[in-house]
Each structure stands twice: as C-alpha cells, then as structure tokens.
Image (spheres, rainbow, N blue to C red):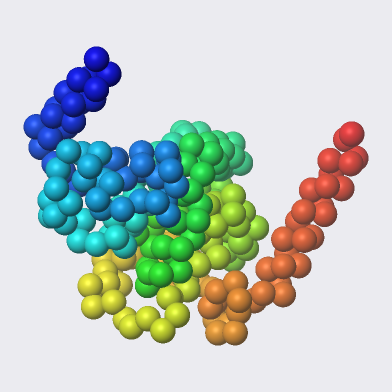
Length: 233
C-alpha cells in the first residue's frame, strides 16, 4: 500500500510543470534531510520525478543552484516590521534570520562559501543588506556608525557584513555586473555605505575596513553593554 502511494506521488510530481522554484524547493528539502554535501542533480531529479537533464533548463550548474537556494532562504526572513523603533525592528529581523538558519542547519556554510566564491552577493542578499542598512539610517545612524554597526552585528546578520565589499580571490571583473547608476538606484543604502568606507587593502575583514579599529569598536561596545547590564542587575 505504501509502495503504491509512493508511486502515485512520483507520478503526480512528474505531471506537474517543472520550474526553477520547484527545483530549488526540492534541493532545499533534500539538503534539510541529508545535508548539502550529499546534494546532487540526480537526487533532485529523482525527487521531482524527472530526468537529470531536465533540471539544466532551470539551473545551469551546481553553483547557480546554490545561489538560487541562498536567495530562497534569505526570502524566508521576515521583512522589516513597521515602526520608528530601529532597535526593535533590527532585533525582530535578526531573530527571524536566526530561525531560518535553525530550520536549515546547512545554510550558514553555503551562504559563507557562496559569498566568498562570487564577485558580488546575489540579488536577495543585496536587498537584505540594503534594507538592514536603511533601518539603521532611518534610526538616525551616521553612515560611518552604520559601517561599524554592520561589523558588530557580524554573524548575527548571517555573516554577510564581513564579505560585503570583498571580491573573490583572483576573480575577474564580472562583465554582467550591474552598472553603478542602476546599483545606486536599486540598492541606495548599500551603495552609500560602499562609497563611504575608507580602503585598507590588507584588511582581513575586507577591503575598506580597519581591522584593529573594528575589533576595538566591537570590544568596547560589548564591554559598555555588559557594564550597563551589570548596573541594573
């Protein structure tokens, strides 16, 4: 009986039109089940009831598949809540990102690896970063303070800030990169921040960042916060 039901499910999947969304959804489900290292086009095709070659009409290769999966996951993060309290809005957004990462334990490693491999973040990641910067700016932060705040947030912003302005090692300029004027129109907050930071090519945090300053800024901010909490405990 179970075998008949499984066959019926496979047949139903095969009849449904194949799409990029279905391919990415199946890939994420398989990664949730067995980890991203075990993911393959063959397994995705089997889960969808199609031949592996059919997948390549929707994702050109494994890297494009992973980029698409990252964008789907970032899309699971709640949009910014309405309201003037920047701290509450940031807190809710970051907690939503944490819930997404807990649902998909493999995601953090894939996001980090794809950020390092690409010359620029994917569109969904760019939109996420732009909105986070926009929340700080609307809250009255100077662009310099936003820059440091993004570093302090660090992994709590999915680890994106560290590679925000960092090109992949040995990478060539992307011929398909978005023109600067289009980038500025689509991601105004991200562009403002990228243009404002000073450049330090030796930085391990990323070009444009003073490692020692960022380290001490985060340390002092943490110690100040602990001191404030100590005073009310």
